[in-house]
Amino acid sequence: MAVRSSGGHDDEICPLELCAHQADVEKRRETVGKLSEAMASLDKGGVLAAVKEGIAAKRDPVEMIEEARKGLEIAGEEFERGNFFLMELMRAAQIFKAAAALIDPVIKECHGDTQVKGKVLIGTVAGDVHDLGKGIVATLLQCGGFDVIDLGVDVSEAAFVAKIQENSPHVVGMSGLLTTSIPVMKSTVTAIEKAGLREKVKVIVGGGVVGEVDTSSIGVDHATSNASEGIRIIEGWISNSES
Amino acid sequence: MHAAWNLEKADRVPVAPINCYIIPYLAGLSIREMFYEPEKLIQATVDCLDILGDFVDPNITTFDHLSIIGKSGWDQATLDWRIWDDFPPKGNIPSFYEKCTLNDYDDAMESGFATILYNNKLKEVFDRSLEDMLYYEFEYKKAYADAWRKFVAEHEIPLLMGGRVCHPLDLLQYYRGLDQLTEDIFERPDKVKEMSEFLLDYELMRGMEDAMIMGAGEVPGAETVFFVNGGPPGMSKSIFDEFFWPYAKRAVDILVDRGFKVYCHWDNDLTHCLETIKGITERLPKGKVLIDFEKTNMKKAKEALGGRVCIYGNVPSSLLVYGTPEEVDAYCKQLIEDCAEGGGYILGTECEVPWDSKRENVRAIVEAASKYGQYA
Image 1 (cartoon, chains in turn purple, blue):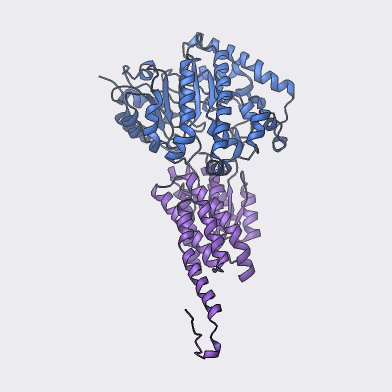
Image 2 (spheres, rainbow over the protein chains, first blue to last red; image 1 turned 90 degrees about the horizontal axis):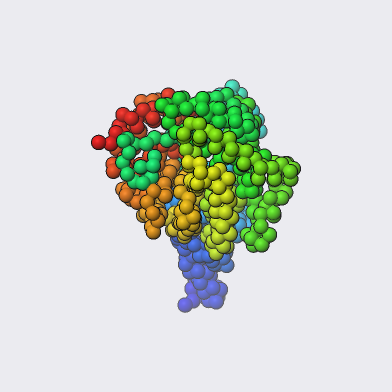
């Protein structure tokens, strides 16, 4: 079927080109939803196929990355509901990263550098070398569009303070698995306060033991042992600060 | 304890909080002394018998941690351990940095652990001489075993364990890191299984050998093999069923068939896997297996496993450090109500008694067993 341009002049009819355009639109439409669906069902092959199809059909790459992110959010929701387990959540993040590796160059080509949602400084507190929980949260934040500065493990109070001064993050995340990490989190918050930085950042703590003890006295804005909940809280803080 | 392993009622619910670092800490030993001087550790254990309340079985797990001394153990030597000499604030309890030290499954299976042992990533921490390694791997164990043999003879307290076996999936998490292992499970499942077979044989051989050195068959308790750690955190039931369970069941069967008892020390929350775990004692004689749960729902564990296998657990570490004796008492009362009926239950800790636990909280566990755990 030939399609006329809005001008309506016969000499402007370009049936072949418009048909191709129409076909592209249809192709793009076909890819919508596939991506998030495949993400949420941890189907890496399906995700990458949908991304490649979308790129070939010249679908807006930002729209694609957001759809993949939506799939990751669904995985996060399933995790919070207890339907997904940690390894599945990590798998979703891995798939997202693989999809992003294909989409990001196209975004850069079309839109230049992507805008980050916010900056998060994260580390496991002094005396604790557990990387796992902190690593998962850092990965999920990166997938969620945050600029993440990962300080690693066994991070001293002074290093937290210095890195906050250097990077001006919106949020500081402290992780710990050991029972001994709780007082260290408190002393780190105190060091941040003494440096006059506490009002400039939101502070969230996480880790196995954190969800089991009363953290109301350690001076943080939120404490959780659930990675997905932590991401949700940070996203809430950032969007509130923007509005 | 014996009655509970046999799924029978004793006079009261047995109580056995697992102790490791708390005993040297309370006795004023450094971590270095604890690991390198068994006589001092044993004296500390004797001194602490009353601290834990009424001379109860101190349930020492030091042997489980022994293989980290001087980086002596093959499995532990392949990890990036940080071992301090002292307790906080000068040092800390041993921990390892998670990093990918096993890069190629095929290479490790073909060449053995040499490829991992001499991994460049561990160069900074792997600084012992070959003589040291041989001493701690082969000779030190005998000296350690002799010291504990004397302790058992003098105090008539059995050992908690003789040897230790680590589940292949736990080892793979340590060698590959959880992120990489997750990818392997989804993308290279056959390779993970092949490597698990390889590691299982090795671990069983090592665990049984250690138990024999500690005196299995002669020294009470040395016939028990501590089977850690219940797999990586966050396995779905399908991952548990496919990658954890077949090797766990096979390890338990092999150990029991060879005359050992198996103390499964399984971390994380495995509530969603209890239906599978029900099969743990299939075709095995009674009294040979115990499962010590960390975060698993004990009420549901009793419902699923009661009459099949003895269960142990699980007063939270955080409660022992930050709680009060009253809170510990209430928690234990609930555990006893949920799990003790009919026997086959031992009141104990989540993983172990943290070194920084309040002493009165540890005593509260023992007292709760006396108060609420009397069988009619």
